[in-house]
Image (cartoon, rainbow, N blue to C red):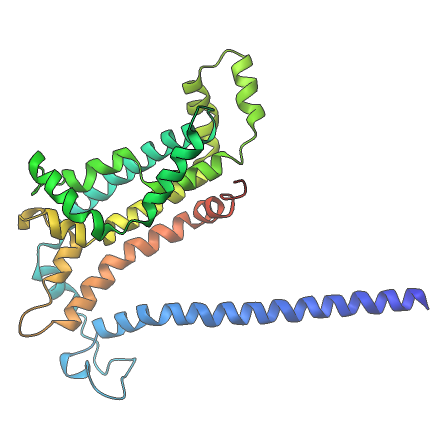
Length: 288
């Protein structure tokens, strides 16, 4: 009797787990579709003729596929020149943010020194300041340095670290056992060698996450280039997309075509780097 009850309990437990898993997957699929709809609509709009853009009820499938919208959109502004400028900013910003975050986070997590936690709290408090608060003082500073009109205001600050990136990498460093560092010190390793040869290789998932966030942020940044770049030859893609919005109207189909082209690299980047990205997110924040 007891054996039969145990078997029924196991079957009931498996059934409950299967139902829960099905419900979870259904909810995830619905949420995934809701997030995918705007991108699908953007692709649909990019292929529509002008007379079909604002009809009601809206049609998802164009009556006529206007593939010419894509070459027309890319020739509307110097796309490849703007792409080059964007890549220059993104790659240098990625390098600066990743390098500075790795070094500063090491000091906040693996080295004991007076006032470390207090200064870390001050660093975290800067995340509560919106960019609009520091925008004017930063512009005045860069204006006095003679950097306005160049890429420097968009690149140089990244080499001094960012609060969120430092926090993310620090939390990952805290999950690495201190015994590894202690064993290396016993063997005569310097602090820099411990950082470079032991801690840094183990932190690849966290650094990949920081790099991905930084690249996406630089790729999508509109306000920074708008403030500091006044020469059209140095414009980025985000500023190029703004050129489709005119005083008397907007070229919606061409704007959507150019937006699709600029969105695809980010999707591919996340697709190929999702393993390290998910690993970096899931393994940070385990220690406070």
